[in-house]
Length: 91
Length: 205
Image (cartoon, rainbow over all chains, first blue to last red; front, side, top):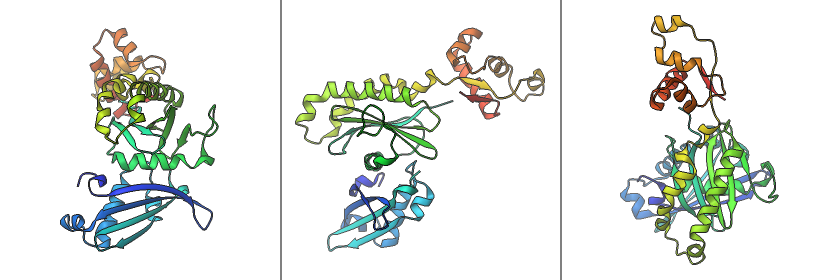
């Protein structure tokens, strides 16, 4: 997989978190079968994939990734991922 | 060598869809991922510098990079540039870019089916407007950080060519001007500037 978009469908939303801080949320969905074919069959591998891709984004600091909230839901056919980043960590 | 623009995105402002992307330089970018961020970050209005368009983002400064935005019609042109680079110059180029793209594709965009491949034909024009991403070289000029000495050449610290080029690096002359002044091919001047840069003897101002 060269790019995330080759497997994942994703979009971004912005919001304000409970603590009043502004957040960016990445919502991503991928077919479970496709992920299994790629050997991405557990949460840690999927998390690693996303963090690796995000680490290539030039304006995302290591701190922003360390502080990110990673959530994953395994459905019967799809895997859904939500990554929440605090706007103040983006620099 | 300096490189002003790392990457440029033309984004459909309404949907946030990345219509066209051009990468210059070596930053490895997942274009879709980054365009998503660029659109999302734009929504955080409080940190924005506002000029004539009060509700629209002009520029966001990050720690190392700067994101510069320009709008025309429904098209958002965004560039990732080094933080120290000239925003007015980039904005001006981006505005021209967005206007040109809007003009060329206005009719198509009205009934666009989502196929971004049709916009690839615009890449030559994009490169021309942004001078292959080197538009900043119009303003940035090399300046010596310390005086060069002939002994640097004698001991092999720098080449004779680098010495000659370095002597003209006063922060006012462009590399083209230096090449013409010395009657030297531009490539040779670029190479010499690269050598001086590696030795930390020049800066770009």
